[in-house]
Each structure stands twice: as C-alpha cells, then as structure tokens.
Length: 141
Image 1 (cartoon, one colour):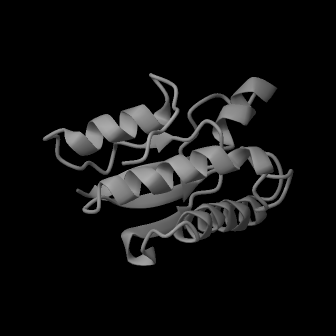
Image 2: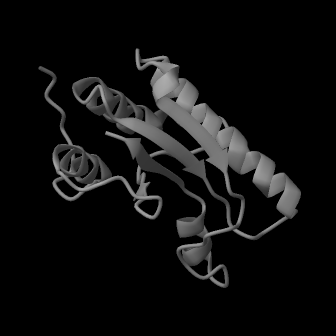
C-alpha cells in the first residue's frame, strides 16, 4: 500500500523486479546502493541516505519472504585491516537502520569485505569512489 518514488532504473526498481521474478537467488547477484552515503572514515550514515534506506525497508515489508545480506566495501587506500573493520561497521549500520524501520532483524545479515571485490580501478578517484559502496544480495525469496 506504500507508494515509492524511485528512479526507474535505480537499485530499488531492480530489487523489486528480482523479488517479483521466478529467478533463483544467486551468490553472484548484488544490488549496489547508489544513495547510501557515510561520513568520511566513519560508519555514520549521512542524512541523505534516509530515503534509500526507507525504500529498502518498504520493499522488504512488501515482500515478506525476501531476506537480504548487506555487504560493505572500501577502496584500497589505507590500512587493509582498518578498511575491513570499517566495511563491516558500515554494513551493520545499514542493517540497523533498516531494522529500525520495522523490518525483522532475522531477515537481514551483514558482512564487510574491505577492499576485496572492487568494481572499478583503485588507480583513480572515480574508481575508488565506486569501490566505496554498500550492496545487497537476496538470500531468500
């Protein structure tokens, strides 16, 4: 019953299409959030992340069988162990934020991957920006 205002080709639309489809879950299919942002070097969500977090929570409420794994990633700048801890904390912060909106915690898990699994080159600022991300994978539907 909730109407979402989301980009047609945005991550929310892709997540909804997957949840509605007969496609099986896959360990290789991740949905990269494009509006979840953090303070630099921190797991504190920026205020502009609230809209996408709310959309994801509402999608999960509309599809009660869907479970998500939230993955946090960093670029390769800095200490790898610190980056891994930061990526874990960011993934956990997203889970906590979704749960605070009424989604059962048992439907969500999180993991930090640090600088593993880059989606772009860490040799440029643009690439590093793309690698600093939070993604979701449907684990059950």
